[in-house]
Length: 274
Figure 1: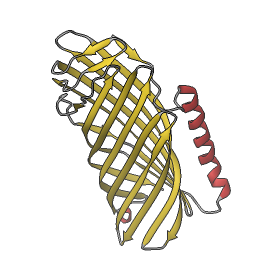
Figure 2: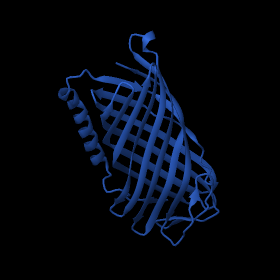
Figure 3: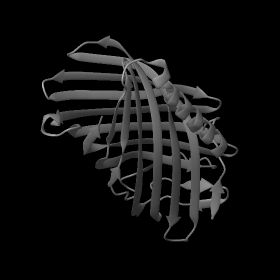
Figure 4: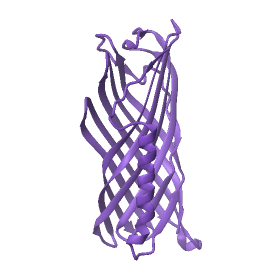
């Protein structure tokens, strides 16, 4: 077995992640003190499908071919993705996360090579990808009306990515895992008509970070029906669609990783709040 200690982004590490989470929690805790408006809070358990698609390349040789996720036999999986929303007048805080695992038996279209471990092209393989993510977005209204509400802001998204590929011919196992936190820009929009609301929130960035080229996009569009009138608290049903793009390329010592992956699918949820 071979492990890759590669760091695709210059800000990973448990200590950095803990410090960032503490800072985000401190900022959120201070928000009520800066606003004379009664805050609104809601929690949304969501469950849906996150289909995986794209290509993976990991090699320290001159190999140039990548392997498609379909060829590797990765099955599409469901994902639990909770969301929490806080609003203080025109200021909105959105926190969300998801945890999804993909596994399957297929074939390596290109050669995988890392730290002396080689999985040859056309070898039958067993592959597993574990992806966990959490994000906090803070947006401020700049078009606040009764019908349309649009806000822009900033945030941070953290990832925990694990990849394991085993050759069923040689039993060689290749493993790599990464943790990182990315700053992002955010855009939020809402159109409300009677008890129905169309919402959308998108975040992402693209650029170079040290020796890394990266593009990240998370677009989430959903439709809500408010049935609070039937209860003594806020409640609504949610149906939505999410699209996540992660495109990363970097050099790590004598190896190169290139991942061009997308995750997408519909979901549903129930929102309750104050």
